Length: 124
Image (cartoon, rainbow, N blue to C red; front, side, top):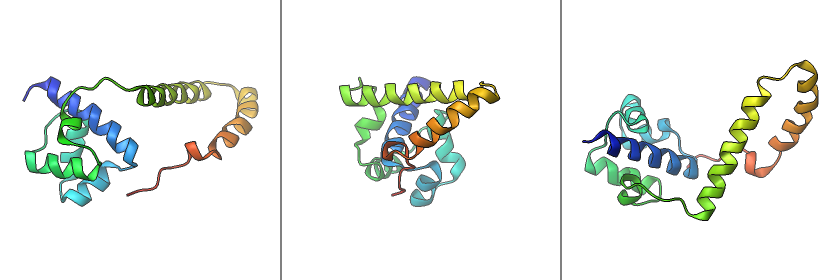
């Protein structure tokens, strides 16, 4: 299996896991797989067997093709990714500020955390 195919699977797998609110541990438990095996799929180190791939696609409410093929993001997915990237940048900066900046930023972060879009996704 080419490394490119494994990397594409890893990227798509992470996207659909995030979308469904499913963790690697959830997948391992539901597929009766080793957590290290699922980790290898998610990092592009290995590729699931076809039967596991189908069960994985079913669990994530997508097709095997969705997991295996490189996709161009649609407008909604692109906006969601941009928002996620912006949030990651925000929190990276937040980690580097001094105490005075922290006092200013903390109430903002608390207000954001109370918004539904920033709440932890429920597990399936």
